Image (tube, rainbow, N blue to C red):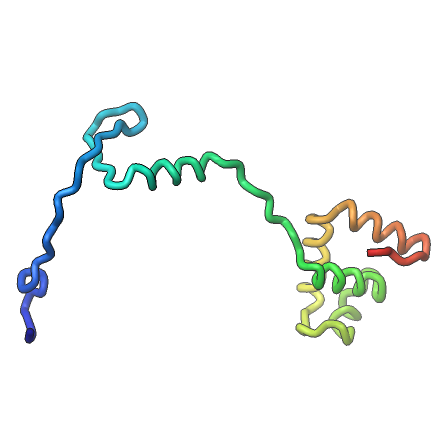
Length: 125
């Protein structure tokens, strides 16, 4: 084949003629837009109209980790950072952030956990 100064001119791309479907865009007919695959457009509109799912979940390991830290050290984040269960060597600030995320995602479970700590009995999982 060899080198070419302009590859677009050396090997032109043939454009196929597609059937044209005319659709109005938001009730306006500014210019007729070409929709090549209307079923794709319909599927995307359907997916966009679905309600958003809440994906606020934490892994069971992270929940157990946070509960262990609170059970062992209370609110002392520096001691939590030196705990042997701190496998990922989180800093006190990172541990505090993880605890706050747990409080925000599972407020009822956190309140039950703290109430069980106050009474002195362990929480059954």
